[in-house]
Every structure is written in structure tokens, then in C-alpha cells.
Image (cartoon, rainbow over all chains, first blue to last red; front, side, top):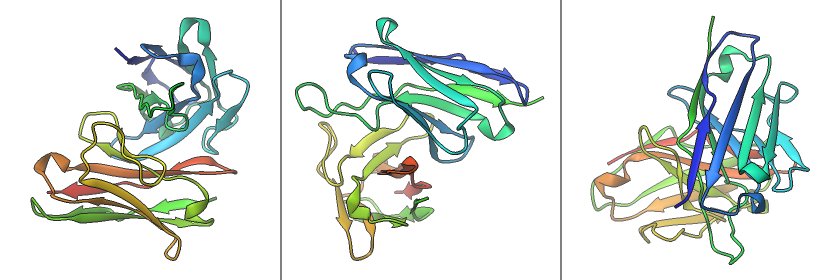
Length: 123
Length: 110
């Protein structure tokens, strides 16, 4: 059974830091580029960052570039998002998913999304 | 930067057909694949269309996707509407600059 379990969310003051984790099981984690997608309360989906399967290449949205860092530990099947200098507009549910890399080794489509972790930036 | 623009909301009666558009500004819609996601309240998104027009296993064939270069838009069409189709729908595509973008989302009311 495929599972993606995000954790690490919570209440953080503006300017503070938070580290999100996404532990996965049931698929070959290291074979997939993984992505963080967020959703502010009552708003739409927003791409945050993507990291290749090897961990060598990362991509960030303009809104988080220079403040957030994506990383992964393939031996622990875990994706991370280090969030620094957070702002009120960073509030939302953070999902880990594979929207940019969805073919398995057999060429079949695979759609992996976690249930998300809520980050609230407020004093 | 490129932007994907969707209507805020659409509606249709059970059994009818609705189409949700996704118009790209800055760049050619046909240059990068488009995905469509369905999100029900309180749930994570799931893919209903990938690479413009492909349906994942388990998605009913009532869902179809297309791309029209003349209008620089992608479309998600849902035929034979069912009450369970009521959800938010998002398009998503790529760009060499900002990499990934989502449309603003469309609320479908059945």
C-alpha cells in the first residue's frame, strides 16, 4: 500500500523556521522527483518546490526562493522542506506529491499525494 | 512568467456535459503537457487527466482532456455529470522559467 505521511506543521511566528517531513512507503521513492505543493485556506493549489530523485537538482517558486530548502534522504524514504523566514502568506496545507514525475519503471502512471500538514504563521 | 487562467465556477445538471477551460498567457499551451486535478473538500488532489488527454486507471471515461492551440487553451470535459463530480478542478503545466504552475481552480457544481 502506498502511503505518504507529512508531518512537522504547526504554529510558527513570522520570521521563524519550521521543517516539514514526508515519509513515504509502498513505492520506489528514489526513482521519483518529489514536489511540495501548498494550499492557503480557501485558496487554490500553489507549487512550492521540486527535487529530482537523485537530490541533485532543485527548483523553487519565486515566492519561496531563498527562504525554503527542499531535500531528501532516499535511505529513509523521506522528503523534507526547511522553511526559514516564514511569512503570513506561507500559511496553508503543505502536500508532498509527484506531479512532475509520474511514470513507474513499467511505464505506468502513478499518482502519489499525501494528506498534507498544516502550517500556520502567526504571532 | 506564464499564468493559467480558469473560470471561477461552472455548473451543470446531472447527465449533462460541462467543459472547464484553462487558458495560458505567455507561452504556447501545446509546448508543455497539461494535467488536471480533482479536489473534493477536505481531501488531497487526485489526477483525472495527465499529459493533455490521458486518463489514469480508475478515472471514468466521462472525463476527457484536450488542447487547442488556436485559443492557447486546454479543456477538461466531463460528460454524463454525476453528483460525485462536484469538486474543485485545477489545471497544471510547466515552463522552463518557473517550472510548474497551477491554474486558479474551478468549482464545479452539479
